[in-house]
Amino acid sequence: MGRSVTDAQVGEECVVCEQVKPTGIHLYTSFICTECEQIMIKTDTRDPKYKFYVEKLRKVTKPEIYS
Image: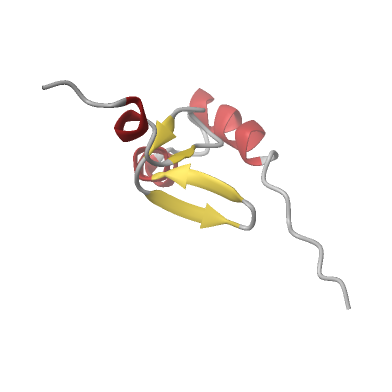
C-alpha cells in the first residue's frame, strides 16, 4: 500500500536545505534538520560550504520578547 499525502508531509521545513524533515532542532523560530545540523558542525571555516551555511542561518530570527 502507498503512503498518504499526510504521511509524506510529517515534519517541518529545514531553514538550510528547505526540505520537510521529521527530526531536527529548533533555533529560536527556525527548524534545522538533523542531517544539516550534523554537516554544519563538521564543516571547517575554510570550506567553501561554510559561507553557504552562514547565509542560510541569517534567516534565523530571534523572537521578540514583549513585556
